[in-house]
Length: 157
Image 1: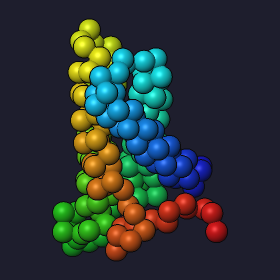
Image 2: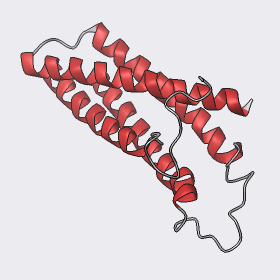
Image 3: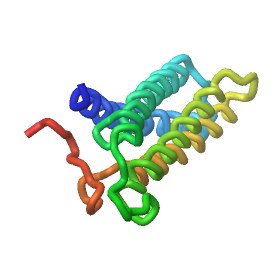
Image 4: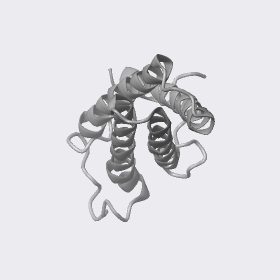
């Protein structure tokens, strides 16, 4: 079960990144061209938010009960969580960064429900999504990150 959830969590990363890029481009074009905020814009934001929340739930399960979860693993004797790059990343940096990113995605999505000018909906969504994207890129365990990196596509050899 753990491997399946880990692979799903990783796959959803790509879905979120793709949807974020689409949402950012749509919002940028919308605010630059003063286009109306369409149902298509709302749907991209909705699918993005659903994907982000689903991935967050899977990640929280892994954080608590996964192979290196805080309930299933103990820090080695004499090791401080904040001084150990692996535990600091997986127990603190990655979860906190992703929770903040999902909150920003949720706020960005909420802008489409407000009774404000469409250009403001696009502008606000753009900035919330862009900041979320930056945080996600900064807190994903990319393969080139020494000691914490994970494969681009785990399970695919």
